[in-house]
Length: 229
Image 1 (cartoon, helix red, strand yellow):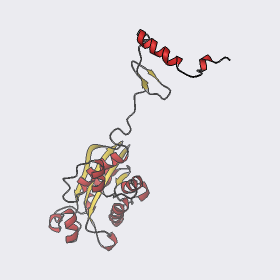
Image 2 (cartoon, one colour; image 1 turned 30 degrees about the vertical axis):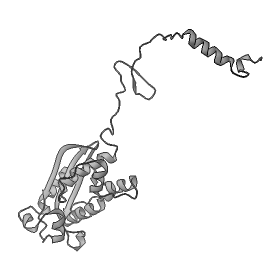
Image 3 (spheres, one colour; image 1 turned 90 degrees about the vertical axis):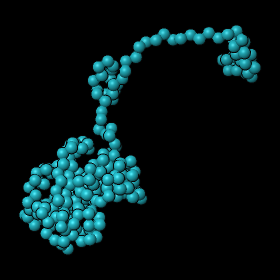
Image 4 (cartoon, helix red, strand yellow; image 1 turned 90 degrees about the horizontal axis):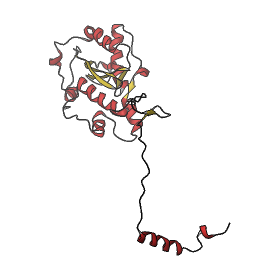
């Protein structure tokens, strides 16, 4: 099963008020495990990046001046996504921004219902606990020390690890081979090791142990084996 783990960085919180995407990071996973294929692009948003946004992701207006605009990268971006579902932490936020850009260019928009929202999964699995990416990395022991700033590709890589853990960890999806070479199968299809027959072992008791046992039996009051039927 192919999925795309995605993250974006933006100039703010609301595309309807002029905020834009400035970075996209995507990571391909198959059966919840990263394949190593990525898509990563900085984008010239054609506006100033507010200082409060720079404090979060470190991406400045000056840095983005020579980067392509969204219209120049949209084809490669959509080709990488293909028809695979996207895995996003707080999917409503990222899809809102992506759809704003796609709409401006006349491209079909993503459907929120088709995305896998790891924020919702984490909140359902750990109700009442912090569910941001840093908190989930701490919960699962994922090293996020390189995350001095938010970054789309780095966050997508961390999210891919979190997503794997939310789905049961690195053994998720593994199955025992139903065809055992040197054993037999049980009713569930699991392989059983073939057992060699062993004669029962006989343990002799000493005369002292036999005497102690007899005395113990004689001391019992009305034992059932002495009752008449």
